[in-house]
Length: 279
Image (cartoon, rainbow, N blue to C red; front, side):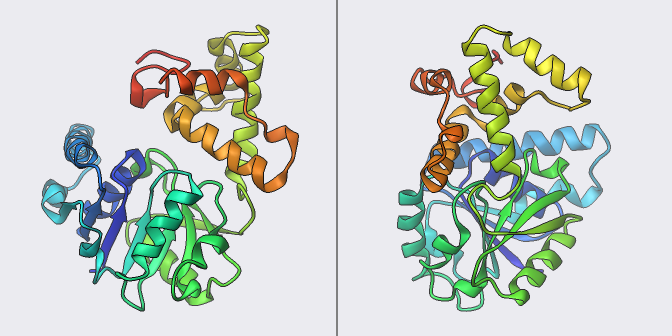
């Protein structure tokens, strides 16, 4: 089995770790924040417990936590054949990380950048072999979303894409391959939707509940745009919109003042206990 390295133990990193661990992969989950690693252990155990209750797990899934090594040391990623990076949507932070990674990774390691907006080509340029880098935009919660948006950078090789698709297939997942451009497909569209929904609340046209009800009851969406924003994290939504605005220089991506205010107030959505909704 491949050894999988996962960088970032936030919501997405925990989800990716759980998905691969339940299929028996050896996992190294790395984060510089000790509290994030402790929370990841708790959340992964709770997710497994829920899967067992709902009969979504098989007996070997009981060993999930035993195949994950939790660490703050980036050097422990040496020897991994496949890396999934899940840190914040901030290019400065990613540049600092990838400069370190360039000294740690094996020559043949494939690196998947789990980003929703940042250029895969730009990130790949920070590593020794950009042909080994691609984007994989996992959806949340990872273990309930069997398809990912896969992004091919300018230098990403066909072999890297094939390897990533093969690796995903081993955990019953699939990828739709698109080209590298800011926001790719899903976030270039969905973040406009969430931002405009926030503007509608701000303009007092409708409440957040009414907006989400329209999308669920009229369009058949499982979640409304503001429920989705809360799930992703309003800070992440704002960071992604800033990237899109900087890349396109198009005013349609300007962040809603209401979104900015909520982030400044620490109302980040589910992860903080309150965003547009209270949890």
